[in-house]
Length: 373
Ligand SMILES: Cc1cc2nc3c(=O)[nH]c(=O)nc-3n(C[C@H](O)[C@H](O)[C@H](O)COP(=O)(O)OP(=O)(O)OC[C@H]3O[C@@H](n4cnc5c(N)ncnc54)[C@H](O)[C@@H]3O)c2cc1C
Image 1 (tube, helix red, strand yellow):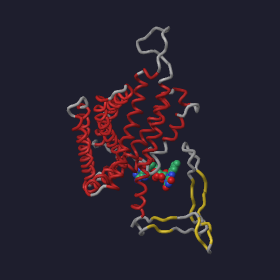
Image 2: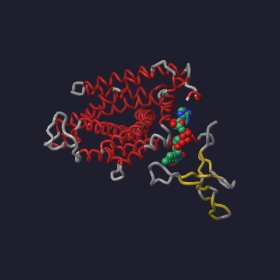
Image 3: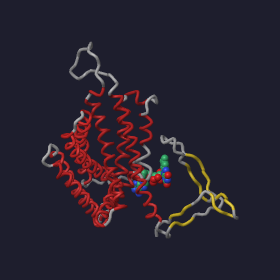
Image 4: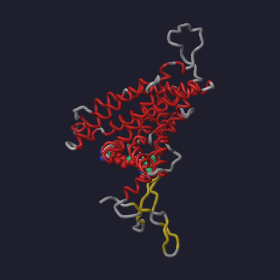
């Protein structure tokens, strides 16, 4: 009938005094990163003398737990984006200092070497990081706004904010978590061999990023949450609200130089609709097949969501660029617009192959037998 939530204190009042509540630490885990956080294995009631106190009503623990958990999940996404941001800026600083190689086509060995930031491949790795971390931060701020509105607004605005936050929490948690493992890896790569040494902080960022796709629910569980629950919540109203928000941004991009990005996002929305309809039709036929690629659906939905955030940023940057007076402001807005283009050209295109996979009739993962490995 559902699990219940208990508070289990370390000590409790017994015989008019404070006594141990039979909660013991079995050991501290030795982890890959996050070494400053003492993650411990707790044991409850080894001597049959542990008391827990019921919170609220029996069998309703899961929904109580989710009140805390949803906020914690957005917090995990924020942590991942923060680590990714630190790695991005550290690798950017290095790329601006490190001379290596010459521009392609420059064959004169007496000429000085160029800084690695001038190589297209290094710029690609920097743009990858910038597009993921700033796209993630943008989505997390968006979720922060909905979270505030869910608390203070009323009526339809409140309902809309609650549903949008609910729908996108698995993405706000998983997209930065999964992608910042890749971006911190790109940061290590930009430093070459130096990135692999402990002389620089990259290897630590790389290790510390890895916990985020695991704790507060693995990415696999968030995929199941998105496709199995959130998409159809309240008759799909959350998805409808999201589509309206995205369409509004596409509308704002029309009549500007960002029109082509709006068109690409519109096409991606068409893919989301097609894939979602295809999968929901499978739900009633074979639930295992329906959910088999839920993690890929989460990735697919996440990329489209971050593309929306990049279009939003680019629309604002375009307006601000016209009025910018200082060179640093102009560089900032140009950088935003260029990164939006990068995201659409290098990341959003991945949704084409993902949609092909998600609508395929191939059932390899479902049909594979444990004995065949
Ligand atoms: C550093 C650290 C800090 C932590 N902090 C806390 C904390 O403060 N509080 C707390 O309560 N917990 C904490 N945890 C525990 C953490 O939340 C769990 O490790 C995490 O939720 C994954 O659960 P699990 O380890 O049991 O993995 P499992 O559930 O065994 O998962 C193993 C793999 O199987 C997949 N899988 C599992 N079930 C399914 C399914 N039904 N369908 C498809 N795939 C599935 C998963 O996606 C995963 O890839 C912490 C863990 C670490 C490492």
